[in-house]
Every structure is written in structure tokens, then in C-alpha cells.
Amino acid sequence: MSLLSRKCRSFKRRHRLLRRTAASPISLVWWGSFEGGGGATVGDLHAVENLSAALRRAGHDHQVLSHPALGIADHCQVRDLFDVRREIETLVFVCGPIVQTDELVDLLAVHRKARKLAVGVSVISRHRQMAARFEAVLARDGLSRQSFDLAISRSLPCAVPEPGKRLKAGLCLRGDQRDYGDGMTEWAKAERLLLQLAETFGLDTEPIDTVLRPGNEATKIEQQFETVDLVLTTRLHGSLYGLSKGKPVIAIDQIKGTGKVKPILNRIGWPLAYSIEEANEALLAGQMRQVLIEWPIEMVTSSQATILDLSSKARADAVALIVGDKG
Image (tube, rainbow, N blue to C red; front, side, top):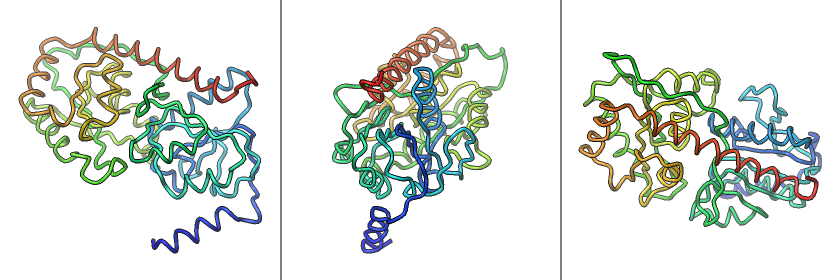
């Protein structure tokens, strides 16, 4: 789309004479609120739903705005986010990276009088000006004061696979991440290393795509994490979901200098996370041998406890920020 076309579209979004969709004074938006579902993932969904549940428990009415393409019955279905009336008093963006997209910029401009907050998000250095459009940000990474991811609220016990079983690895791969800038993502190298690792150890593999779409709903994605024996991933939520389902995880942070995967896994005490600079065949093979020799039940259990603790605190902080003096 040309620059002129984009500007015309933004003008029409911002200066509509008629907006017909009512909204709650407290409204939660996420990437799943945008046209077509916005490429939202199961982690994004559970983050906004966990926050919504925490707000309900605290007695605060609100709505989660979602695009009908995702078919989430409990949410307020909004086909056109820019048809929402300027009734929102507190607009909360939940989970995912804060990146400068026309849709997000226009949404914040339309609701210019609303208090604008972002919680459970990633702040990327090249998009800091976008993060500055929010009055307050509780970031899981990217700021000196860090909160945590909101997606995980429960866990399953880690169990040793049956002796002699042919193990199955879930492959949860992110692909390119252009949000970080040109040439910042060595995704092809990371994926090659993980695929080669699975092949070297004779693992069956199952691709796990965390992006929500018809036929790839949240229940299916969660079930995939539950039925594999371990997870090989370049995704943050691939790591957190794998661990929460009781599975050992080997993760590569494919962003040069590290993005969010390794720093967040370091915070939960999970040692099998590697920067793209340090990851190599020998290192990964050595770690896989250790996993197979002694299934890391204690390590998984410890990281699960830390995830749940940090997630719970992050949700409580988010609720306190959202309700302010209403609490």
C-alpha cells in the first residue's frame, strides 16, 4: 500500500463522523482485536484472559475486544475496532510486542482522551517511541523495571517418559522477526540447529504453530504441548508453554544480542536457553544428552514455580495499575 493510501486510511479511521459500537469504560485490547485477528497467538489470548479474570475477581467491570475471525465467544466481538465509540476511559493493550503499526497508532489517536496502558508487553528498542504513547507500561522485557508475561496461570507435573519410548519433540518456531529490524534475526540458523538436533537424536517431531486461526484454536495448541515429550523452540511462549506443561525445553534466542527469549528464561532459572551467538551443534547435542541421561524433573518443577509466581505478581500489578484509585 502506498504512503498516500495509508495516510488516507488513517484519516478516515481517525475522523469518522459516526461510531456505532458501544464500549466499556475499561476495555482490554490485544493483537486479536485487530482486523483478521491480528496474527495473535495462544499466549496473547491467555494473557488477556488471565488479566480479565483477575479484574473480574477484583470486582471491576470491563470488556475484552476481539475480532470475530477468532470466534472467541466470551469476548466482545468487534469487527471494526475503529467503529468503537469514544467512551473508553481506560484502554489497556495486553501482551505481545509494542510495535509501530498504523492500526495501533490510529487506535490510540482515536481514543486520545482515554488513559492508555500497556501490560505484559515487550518493548523493542527501535519502537520505544511507540511505547512512549502509553501513559504507563508494565513490560515483561525491554525496560529496566520489568514485570512478567501474563499467559501462564497453571502447570502440569513433569514426568519421565517410559523407558524405550521413541521421543517426540514439539518444534515451535517463530520464523523471521522483522520487528527487531533488518538483519537482526538469524532465524534460519536457529531453525537449522534445532531441526538438526532432532534428527541427530532420532526424535519424532511435531510442528506447533501458536498463531490462532480457524482450525488452530487454543485447545488444540495446548494439547500439542501436552502430548510431546520435550520442546525445541525459538519462541518465548513456546518455552513457557512447554515448561508449564511439564516438558523440558531447549530454546534459542534468534535475535542478535538476544531479544526476549533468553533474558526471560534466565529470570525463571531455566538453563537450556541460548543466544544465537553461542548456540552450536556440539553445545546443543551435549545438553540433549544430559536431558536424556537424567530427565530434568527438578529443573522443570522449579522453573514452573517461578513462572507461576512471577505471572501472578504481574497480574496483580496490572490490576492495580488499571483500576488505580478505584481499587
